[in-house]
Amino acid sequence: FPVQWVIRPHSDEYHDFRGYGGRVAGGVFKPGDKVTIQPSGVILNLRSLKCMAKTGSAV
Image 1 (cartoon, rainbow, N blue to C red):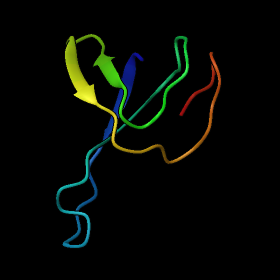
Image 2: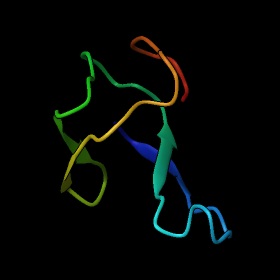
Image 3: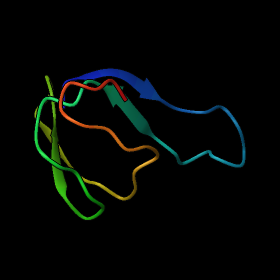
Image 4: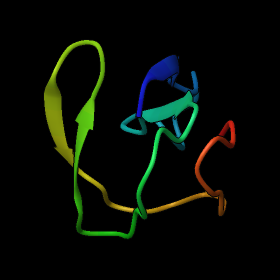
């Protein structure tokens, strides 16, 4: 999942939210999966999905 945007709302309600936007490079994601963020190589635990997408889709 090559990250193109880091989404950090500036509000009290979502003060601890961090989302990522980019293009789905391949595979299937579901909550609980470990995801490698590129290009940093950071591995995250996927908590939730805000939309559905398939390989090649921008999310």
